[in-house]
Length: 381
Ligand SMILES: [Mg+2]
Image 1 (tube, protein in one colour):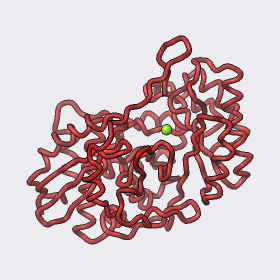
Image 2 (cartoon, rainbow, N blue to C red):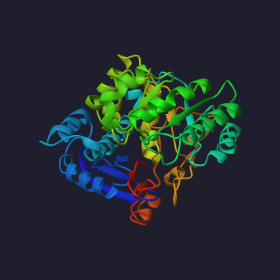
Image 3 (cartoon, rainbow, N blue to C red):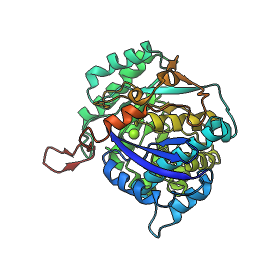
Image 4 (cartoon, rainbow, N blue to C red):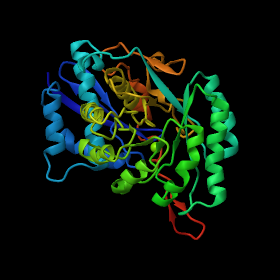
């Protein structure tokens, strides 16, 4: 079997899908994208494709090595995401060629269902109670929300009250048997995080995510040591090497993204590394159907897995939905807030190729918002 063609599709709301075709007729799908940089990753994929055309798709590890190391300059979000999507597609092909789901190739299932959490926004504190109640009603046992909107460099009393208010509201609606996680989204300075984290302890969040930006990982150890709540990070880390300092800093949960951190090949290794720190993974996934399918293959085959993010039906997916590009949507149906094990070969989904082709280049490339502080200076989104 040889790889004969690699195509990419920029589809709404902000995703890039890749399709890898073989001379056997087996086709694999991947989702190589960085939010806000789809066109840049698309170019990276087309460059990496030169390394794959004419090659045996089943030599996944060798392709991963060549794609990640076959150039003097390596790593980072763009290249690691390009590799990630192609890696997903190669695993999809392998599973389809051998007639088994990818998680069977990874050692077989270690659980029967995968717990998922749903997003409840959090930008407007007044809406938190209704949003959490709606997810409980939908059957979810866990939700995640933003801690705040734009955040000043040192939180005012009102800033702190609003963060705490969201947590208190969520806990009140959820009761004692469900969980909420809080995403600081890199909006907090280190000093702010130190100031706010203790106030969340009484509400027992599952974890607080990205309390500080990844570039301050060298300060994470002290922050973790002084935090009464578990700390999570990882959506902006792209390899084993990137996550090691966060693990050494003592984070409680690691959140690699299947479409950013080198794909299935690297995330399973990241999970194994995390296991040596007694840390579970909770794969980040605000992306589309192929990224979610790849996440589930890891979730079902990884012992130290905690919970899965997903964006089905979420407000920020404008113009298209996770399920829009699938032939059979049942695979992502929730059962009491959990995914059941996909049993179809490969990634376990059938991409609606017609819908994908029709949607290609049909919307403007999404860009992350640029926020400003009241004095006009740049603010973290
Ligand atoms: Mg996040």
